[in-house]
Structure formats: C-alpha cells, structure tokens
Picture (cartoon, helix red, strand yellow):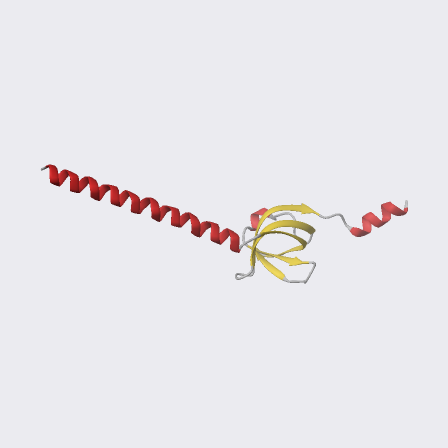
Length: 113
C-alpha cells in the first residue's frame, strides 16, 4: 500500500513539473511574437473603404492594413501620428495610440501673422 502511495505521489509531482515547464514555454512564444512586431511611431494618412481601414505612411507611401480599425475611427483622411506594432509579414499594423498632426498650411499662416 505504501509503495502505491509513493508511486502516485511521484507521478503527480512529475506531471506538475511538466505542466509548469510547458506553461513557461508558452510565455516565451508570446514574447517572441511581440519582438517580431516592434512598436514604432509612424506618420501618414488614414484611409477608409467601407469597414476596411488602411494607413499610408508618409515616408515611403507604403500602405498598411489596420488590424484594429476601432482605434482610428473618426480619423479618416486625416494626417496623423501613430504608435503601432508593425507586422511586416502580414503587411498590417495594430494601432496603440493615434494623435492628429498639425496641418503645415495652418502652421505657416500663423507664422506669417
């Protein structure tokens, strides 16, 4: 009877260690995915076509699909600065923060006055 209890205890300990190790490996996969999609600041214009939103970067005129369009609603056709995770392999961005850019023309007019 004692041998059976010791064997069951040993098996339960081994299974617990295996579960903890597997959980820690899952955490590493999440960190790798976050590293693969770095947070960048981009400047450009938000475009909307129905429910599909895209971002056109000022620097290279590259168009990116926006993964979370609810974050940019109301900014259609506006010149904005974004903080976003960039998924180059999917040609998509996940927007974390949006801020309106001041228009260059309005800035030049106020400087003349």
